Amino acid sequence: MAVDTLRCRVCEAEYPAVASGSCARCFGPLEPVYDWDALARTVSRESIEAGPRSLWRYEALLPTAAPKNIKGGPGWTQLVSAPRLASAVGVGEVLLKLDHTNPTHSFKDRVVGVAAAKAAELGIETLACASTGNLGNAVAARAAAGGMRSVVIYPNTVEPEKLLATAVYGGEMYAVRGTYDDCSRLIVELSGEVDWAFVNVNLRAYYAEGSKTLAFEIAEQLDWELPDAVIAPIASGSLFTKIWQGFEQFRRLGLVEGTAPRLYGGQALARDRRSRRRRSRDRDRTRLQRRDLRRPGRGRRPQHVAARRHLRRLRRDRCGRHRRCAARSGCRGRDRRERSRRRARHGHRVEDAAADRSAGRSRDRGRRRRAARWARCRMSIHQPAVDPVVASFRDEITALDVRLVSTINARIKAVKALAEYKEERGLAFVDPEREAWLVAYLKRVNGGPISDEGLEELLAFVLALVKTEVARG
Image (cartoon, rainbow, N blue to C red; front, top):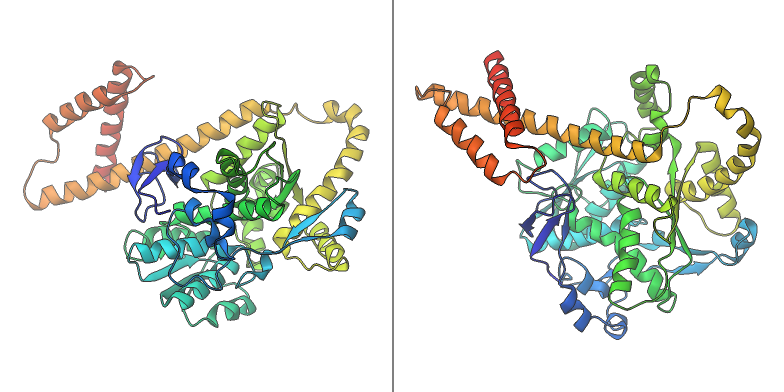
């Protein structure tokens, strides 16, 4: 169904359903708002089963209408049994979701398919992204299929083989001298300058919804039953959280029953932010730059709010406040290669992200065996661990501080522009009446817990700081 409203996950501010990926008030991520009462009356197992054999069979649960030509679309990939693998890992049954059978051989076809449909609905003719591989392939392919222009921005260190897989679709490609982070910053700036649909920036609210179709398909392919557990790569956290959201939405509509599945996430240690923080600080810049040259397809990814959300969810589940439990594992490169070879011997070839999942689980078993040997001496050789609740609050406070600094920087830029405009026209820079009105207005809208006196002190400090920075030029 086509949604009319986007809502911020953090402050719950609402916006019209346009090309916007973040909240203007708090910079939090936006999500589509669905009419669940109407969906409960119209969506049924029968209506879904009558749909096309693609992700658009779940059109009613997606934020945009299906494109006119939906033949050969992404989704509805096979769910196959791997009995030898199940026997090797010691569980009753293992099922593999073969998303490499999508048009460009990755799950990115799902998210890009939804974003491209929304771009066409909004009348945007250019589909764009920053990518080091799979996302660029999906964007270029979907744009070619829909008669749109595609633009892919990538680090200049990406392997030629990956570039060839994107270039074959005939879109535009631009190299950036830097890392994936540099490309991400560039497209964020471009999203405010050009009328392009950046699938993972200004269309992210719709783009991310495509991931939950994995959960929809798994439930339907299991004859409308929920699995006991799901293992998925974490990366930025978006796929991981959307899989959980997909199962919850099916339960909300009564399409499936029972307890939500346990979620297990795998992450490569070299890309795990929490693991990196535990390393020595004196090698951060040099070795990260060296790693970008050594593994050009895997620069540091920007920290998304979704990643922080899934980490909070994992911590909450571990403390027993919910019946559903989850775990998170890290894996090294050599573990990943071994698990890739192991799955290949059972008839299934997997890429790095999928190998992260099984490799992480294998490392966990070894880690638990070693834990007993270290238990007696750990307290004598290590500082006490930080309380997980304290760590959670610290992470949240740090994120808020980052937003505060970004907001103040944005205010300084705006005031500088205003000062230049006033200077050109011979107007006074300082306007006491405006400042008095601002203080009174913010007192009226202040929802606490800051007092009026504290608000006055804060504004006085901010105004003085901004004036000082503007004077410095």
